[in-house]
Length: 248
Image (cartoon, rainbow, N blue to C red; front, side):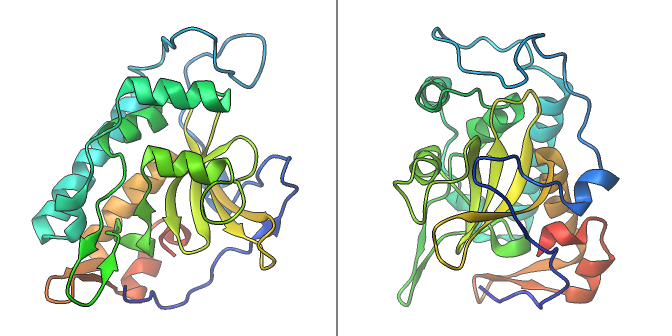
């Protein structure tokens, strides 16, 4: 992976592992889309004992996320990026329901929509190396559902993610994780502490904003190099894009 040219990365603020994530700069400028009305009692939606039947499954947020996923797929395919042919089939609803029962919290419908489309990626193996295809901007690797659960429960690389988070994408010792128990899909950057014992929190934005920012970057700032099987970044074009901090 061709490393991105360093830019001003948002300052990461240490947070208590049991506390809420701190909002990043993108959250204030781009508030989350209005979510469907949630049940009146708890603010956190917990997984019911029986099968989940979400009334927000066909929400506008889900529709927008599905549209952006289609855009990403078409742009990966158009440039011939490895990820275009290495996406794994989406997870079944039964598998997603099982994850909710195990974690005890409901997946936001838009996060379920992502995993219903993409359940991780298959590695690319060549004579010289084996690598996981990335989305392009930032070098993020989409995680499969099982891998995400292992990381969240402390069975994967690094300690378990902070409570209430399930990782969607990974990059070295950094994760983009979705906050569980919410009717809208909010994702946030978490970075492993230097001592490897906890996490720091960075920006927090809607999932659809992150995906659409990536899709826009593929038009202007991030290009695929077929011969190298890798992405190259134009740092000046990247910084000119809205929400450039989400591309680092």
